Length: 200
Image 1 (cartoon, rainbow, N blue to C red):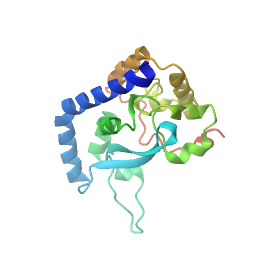
Image 2: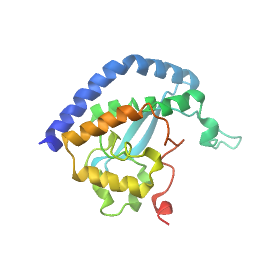
Image 3: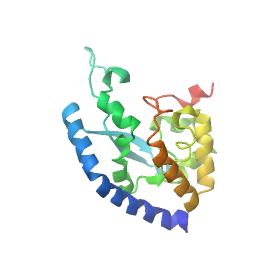
């Protein structure tokens, strides 16, 4: 009952309320990024959702599109602005994902949606993470964030999917609120490494 119906209702309700309450912050960040990123405040990227259906995740854009003389994007560290670093550390870049929740692409709590290119590398057991909607935050994110190895994160994703409950989701939500104010364990880009490379 909770997994199939109540969880989705909670997602929609809190995503709507969240956007209302955070609208002043949303607007300020939007306007600053419009200026810093030449009118492009949002970052869109294809990610696998429930049943591996591809959707576009929405984030505030924390890096510029600066390129070298050959037209190639500069390294992430050179494109990251001070404000971009700030919104990442404070997780403000994640606010637009509330829109993804209202669209039905994501849930508040669930396995984080990783890159599409990782799909061929999952084991059959790990693919269970795609039987539910991906989350803005999840068990792996409140259990060490980027200090965990990929395999450890995937084990936690499997554990979450196999034990979804209101109490577990509430616990993860409360831990996420606390971790928003903690910057340790955050890397510049948590999704750039390849799964099979990490398993070698």
